[in-house]
Length: 415
Image 1 (cartoon, helix red, strand yellow):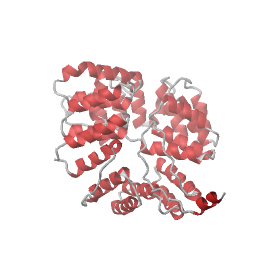
Image 2 (tube, one colour):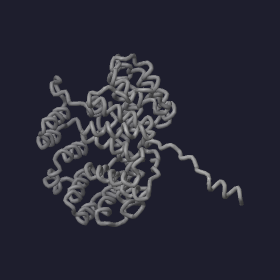
Image 3 (cartoon, helix red, strand yellow):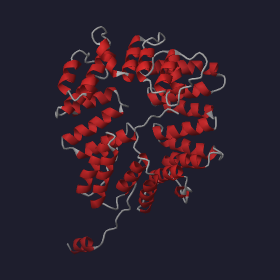
Image 4 (cartoon, one colour):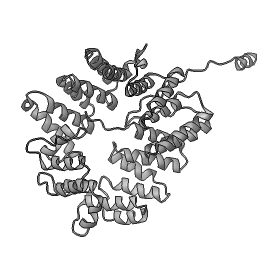
């Protein structure tokens, strides 16, 4: 009994705070340990952030920091949010504070990006010896700070990260940036092929494979690899026909080449969108005979949702039916959305998502329905954000926080 009293009286070592680990879509998010009042404000901040309400999110982070001012998680995420808002000076100050509090590789990576945006010397690199799993963060910072540096050490760091975590989309994004900057396309293709072995249906990796085979010299030699990737993407509902899919792989995250000789119909439509002429683009894409009929409706309605009112009486396409449901949801009419949803087959991949969003808007428990939607569309960021909101609405802050972290981490990954 005496030894127990002595043990209780002795001061216990406090573990050093750690930065938020990088959250990869599809992986379990690590929910930070915070003061209970800080925790409530933190979850609200995450939810605001997934909904794009950045200033409300910043205010919620600040409220959380009143109760837990030494939390690396809170200080770092507020710094990253300020950077997202374009307030780089505030971001640098916060991220430097997070580093002082014990932030790790992810903190240094965010600080590096903010300092580069300000044109400041990159102090984040000082004394930085990254963990192998996070080597891609260091490589990205070094590459952007010193673009002419020999890429071998940087590519090795990314390769180490991918060896330890072959499904890390953040590491793949950095690898793609390095591969394209230094024209090491064959290296990148080898990485993607290895990553696809345990994940043969990963849409982002398949798109990386398409993009890399486009850039390689002697493209005809890689035609079977392109065709294989296209077939898999088509079965996932990610691609349509060969010409459009290859155009997507080359151009989806880059400005369209509107000066290209003999541009395809789809490229002409994208050029109209880039000039702010979305309605004209929707009209153009409706005439694209190289695209499937369903894809034409889907793309046209994405650019001009009001087109649904013209098509609804004469077209039975699932894309048109989904557009009607989304318009009702956007108008704040969830009951009308549920009524529209009856016309959409339950096996449609978007059915659970749309039903869950309507139930959520009605204040009902939408968790099970949205989770089914997430199983059908695992990379859908809006679904993850809705799951966060649904769990928060039902009083489950831990799950809300985890889903919000996944939604925030998900970004477009094409090079």
